[in-house]
Image (cartoon, rainbow, N blue to C red):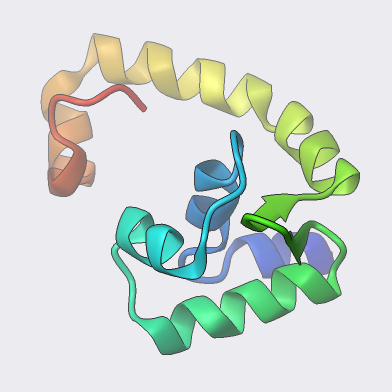
Length: 103
């Protein structure tokens, strides 16, 4: 499936996660995602072309389709939170940059 290919690309889900709230500028998004400008620019272009992200006043934001996708991912988020609480050591080992933070 095309959407799974897109979401499986490095930083794609992280970008969508960071855009779940307010619009973000390129620099703020780059800092939040901890990625380089070239990769972020590539992913944003792909996410924009897919209709999940748009650029406007205030920066990048999720489109209505992007918000629908985020809603569809809520069961995964709920599972991830439960998993992180049951096995904090496993969570830290899986993602040392986020040790001690909620999924």
